[in-house]
Image 1 (cartoon, rainbow, N blue to C red):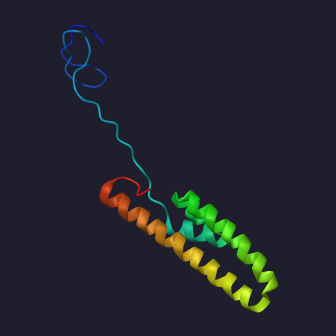
Image 2 (tube, one colour; image 1 turned 90 degrees about the vertical axis):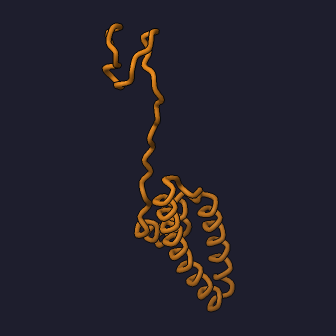
Image 3 (tube, one colour; image 1 turned 180 degrees about the vertical axis):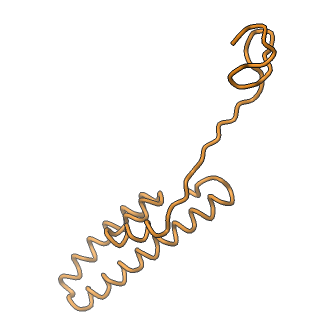
Length: 115
């Protein structure tokens, strides 16, 4: 940058008497949307993993612990426990899918993640 230039060659702002560029700088951060399909598949593979992918880490870890407890109880309550475990697993996949939709909707409307 040459001192007698009226504008900064890097940012294009007007240079004041001190040789520093005037103007406000704005940092733009782009956030990527979360894929509903990826969230669902991750939760299909491992309960709670889709929630972690979407950014709800505490929820995902809690679902993992609850899945372990339900699996343990399913062993003792054989036919009924297995049905509960399958229902919980399917709900977990649906929940991850809906959280990704919620995340994307909020991101599109505000530009920020909802959590």
